[in-house]
Image (cartoon, rainbow, N blue to C red; front, side, top):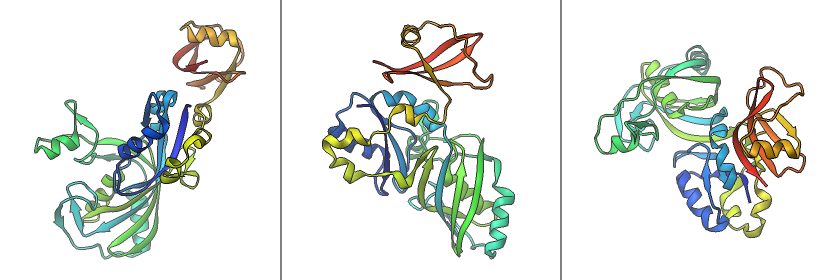
Length: 293
């Protein structure tokens, strides 16, 4: 049993709670997820079972889409509605058309973002949220993130509803905070739904309770690792080449591959071997063996 479960995480529980509840049912050797969702958030949570845990980094790097609700007039220490109110401000007197234009003019494209104080990012090896809870100094500099699309879906002051598509590492909580500040006001995230991670869509997400009740049928619900990596170019190799790669060797490859192909998913015809490889100077260089046999 190996693969990815596209779970529609309900609001009110943590991403780890989902893993904890699935463990007794799946009984995996290894289990994890590709990208935390805060307890208040819902939507696509990719749960990785057994060998699929080896592709966590690749899935976490995928762009993501969210439906967000921002409440103006308050700012909190967590940048969302669950936090302690730090300050209050007047709600912006702005029309929907003006707000939409402002968002696209100031928050579309590459932006600098300071991560929330309460986040899993680490400072001196300690997660920021632990430092913040312990009253320790929290210092995390701004970093560049990408907002590919930001659309105003509704404006009923003090609440704005947004649809956003962002790069990995973008905090929608921080986006809400910064939008409020940029408008000379304050704002916090009051609702968040992750609707897409790469090719994984919310409409295809599995209800957690139904998955827990699935029993022996769970294996059918797993998205194969090969399919989960469909965003990467695929390379079919012979069984002999697969054996060489599994042994850490660098087999010669004479077939044409685009020069900019980058990371490749190597599979054999029998589909019992999968590895991440790169082509360098006419040989295949194994970067990670996901499974062999």
